[in-house]
Length: 139
Image (cartoon, rainbow, N blue to C red):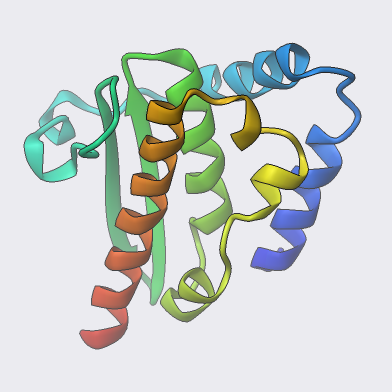
């Protein structure tokens, strides 16, 4: 599935929820099904700055594709970061750079986050994009 199809699938999954509480419950449940990040990767190098909770994004580049894994000490933070990691994982650096996660506003995610959590989500996107740019330069 390409990145646009993954984006559309996330929209289809999130749109049916009547209110933001149900939507966030779904996002949190999705994150719970993902494995925890190993403690060896919970280091400052992978820590997202500007987030009120502790949030780590572990990137790796394999078979010309970027992969990302998120973990956090806060369920909503882990859930929203995990969604971005799912969207951008197993994608080429160029596709990652080209696709902004603006659909999160369309489905009512960003509007219901606190300003600090929105800043954290923006920082996640910046970290993912910067890693993709680095991979593109080092190809």
